[in-house]
Length: 211
Image 1 (cartoon, one colour):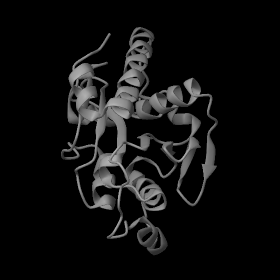
Image 2: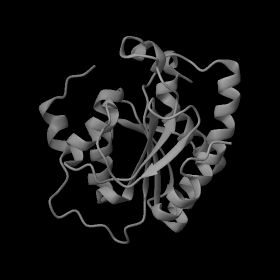
Image 3: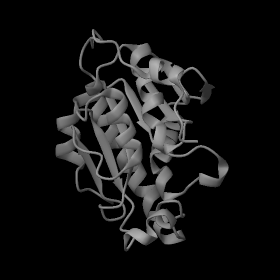
Image 4: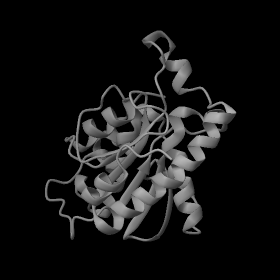
């Protein structure tokens, strides 16, 4: 699950002269783990966000092995993606997509769970460390930079490192899940704001928002 082949390493590398055309976000990547056993878990909240975006835009998901991801896209101006590499290797899928679409890191928005934020809290950022999140760590390694936009969605504290795995791979209770549906609707609005008006506008309007 966590091994990277030499071929994967080669195809994950971004070309040195990769140039963006306008600086606008063109790739939104929801992070999570593939498989029904991970559906609706806290760690897969990024998948839930892009699922809602795809549904709202009437887009269907297609598995594309060359990208190591499921893709939903009507045009090349906006691509939604869900890596099928498992969380720890998310960067492989992201870098492949970036290479194919000739994207700069600032045109890629990663959406993922954050245990350091209260449940339902949103936070857009333009850059930053992985903060202990293995999916973001993988993206940083594969892109060679931590300067790419991201949206963190709070899933609440695990209550200690020993409980971390069970917390992130566990599911929300009914009350939490109802709250997260409202939060995800707001998060979709936030991502659409970032797409249309830029990341700064999304940060100003949506950071710290919950319901």
